[in-house]
Image (cartoon, rainbow, N blue to C red; front, side):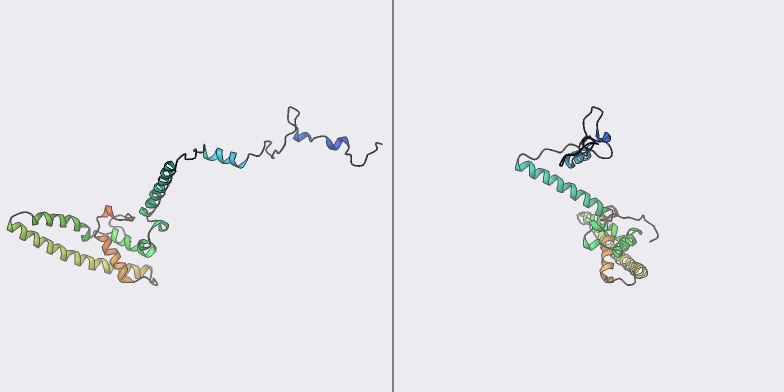
Length: 204
């Protein structure tokens, strides 16, 4: 029987655990259950994100990097808005009701979308020094203006019917929604923003 002195541990307690001894006879400190040291936070982040760019050395370089980051952020936001993502749209275009109005406009051929083309032809006709051509140009412009009024009236009725059918309890003013749709209808389809999400002739 061995005597134990106060404050002393037996030799068996001071022997390192066999699981913590490396093949070279040294004791592994701070190892995890995977058998390797736990990586530091900055080391783990460095492996995930790649080499960290050096900090800017001048104020001009710092401003340049800041502008590049802002430009990248704006590009991402504009792309999301073009897709019709509500989180990136301005308040004027946000919400399912406005989305429905855009779909109603984009699913039909609108006379207003030819406004710029007809206006350009009328402007050219005014500069032709032939009285007959100028008179014909005025007639075309007046007739087209009447067509736009009639088509806008039909578009407004369709917008009202669709909104009342899908969102009968909406708190948005119908006059504002109709004007929103008519103003979009006067743009060329490829220039509309947000971009059309439905093809021509689609059932909305």
